[in-house]
Amino acid sequence: MRPVEDLRIKKGMKVSELLQQFANSGGFTAPKLGAAVEILKEMRKNKVETFLSFTADIVSTGTRGAIVDLINSGIVNHIITTAGTVDHDLARSFKNYYRGDFMLNDGQLLKEKKYRLGNVVIPQDHYGKVVEERMMPFLEREYEKKKKWAISDLLRDLGKEMKSNSILKSAYAKGVDVFIPGYTDGSFGSQLWSFWEMNRDFSIDSLEDEHRLSEIMFNSSKKKMGAIIIGGGISKHHVIWWNQFRGGLDYAIYITTAQEFDGSLSGAQPREAVSWGKIKPKAKQVLIEGEATVILPLIVASL
Image (cartoon, rainbow, N blue to C red; front, side, top):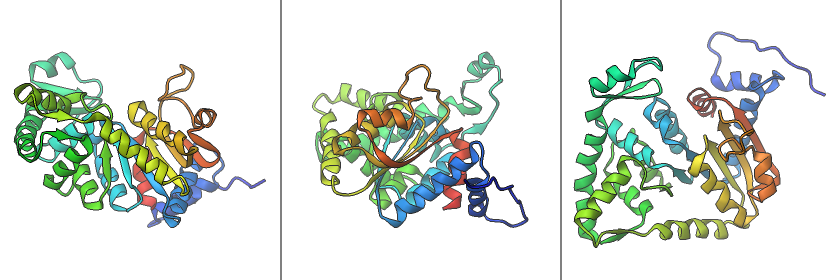
């Protein structure tokens, strides 16, 4: 039995000091942040092979910078995400997104040719037009090299050309491979389709990336494997699905706002993954119920 300790906030204290106090505060979500930091420290110390998965929506926000910092920290070895990550990472490298409000008039925004993503406002020509203008010449250059591509190879080459504050650029610089199993979704996928319509001998080898994931799993069967899973959907499932073939994750950190009562994968908690063999029964794991734009920067800053 450990006593609940009151938080003692002082001028100039470090974020890491605050999260250490969270760990000792007893309730309710705060201790989970402290636990996540301790798990990440152990993962980094033991050089655990680590997956990072996240949904694309947070890339439209300033949390993109926290993801870049997490990649640059050297903790992350592999990324699994959604196609919209490429959209927002690419668009924001060249154009601004703007702060808005959840309650803006969407009909009026449509007239003004602006999109609303939660409380982020995106001028239409700052999104699809930018992605098309950048992707089409890029695909032409890739097409000259060869006709058949794995998505992770395309993303590596795209990252090489991106700006330094981007997720793809940081992943390229750190040698972190990026997998997008649902690559046809979003503007990125539309550009691939459009290019294929004009060049029918251009093709995506969807199963090559699955082969690479299998190689990662089977080659790491005697090593420790961990995952930082932000949100749900296909990116979350792909991480835990593949890890069942090596006996499950040894470390798992979930950050989610989804609930489990509807049986969705996004809301499924780590204990459910144990029943599938996706997380080991004795794995060090924590589920943080909270919104990633608040939770993730605190965790990254504490490291």
